[in-house]
Length: 408
Image 1 (cartoon, rainbow, N blue to C red):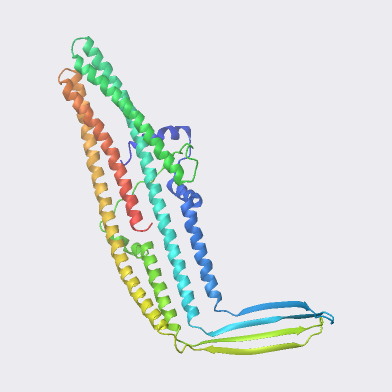
Image 2: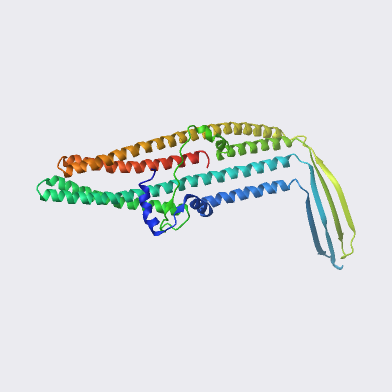
């Protein structure tokens, strides 16, 4: 029953054997070509690279170095000097390094949540664009039927007027109704073109390219309670972003606390140096270093206090984000259920208006009804048809808003 009028807009494509673009196909194409989606994906790659760089600080580091110089003085022959060798170091005790890794991992998770937010928003816009275009095409197809009916009505009134059975006011009103329908048809065509251009922009296609035929699945029946989606809400991108901020704040707190602890590092080197190549004396060195802060003028304590305050603020922000996510999801869920219930009301009203219009038209042709009653019933039928289209559009928009509210 849903979108039964909208299907009229797809009949030419079906007759021509064209392949309709599905929502999932359009979503994949959008995420591959849309600049916003690509920027979010690149930000995630950047965060992943920074996490890998932070993890690299936990492992040994090796270096190769070499230098050469030629020197001399007045009255003496110039000579060469060179050195080359290898060196390496390994952190033994550095509490700041694991904290930096945790901070980089939290940044990567925050970037992942930001990408999911962008994808969810673009999917919401794409679903709305699909629904708007299908609704506009349905309105255009409905307008074509209205034009035909208006033309038939004008011919009928003209015949009655010529036969002296109808007044001139009725004829003029019917002509004005036909011209109004023609103007509305042009407006529907303009609105459809604007919506198709918006879809092309989302898909990163040329704005003037013709929009393909579309296939949007019907929204499912909403469940009785929003609690069925609680497991999905716990994985919402807003909650994951808030958790990442809290994890980053805790990592900063650990890093600030570790600044008071000693740091130990092992080092080693093996070098050759001299003035002749390749014969040269060599030397090697192995050792370890230990450093412990003794006095910093209160800087370390202040940094730790500030990090602790930031961690508590991030924890409060996480709680607030959870409340907002669940409340927004419930609001969107209730709106979705309301839109689904209203669709049944609109369908019932449309059925009643169609039956009433058919009856009054028969009565008018038989002389049992006045022109004004017939005109009012015709206007009511057109209004109910447009109302039913609007109810279908509202249901699609409500479902799109709900999917965005739960983070999909």
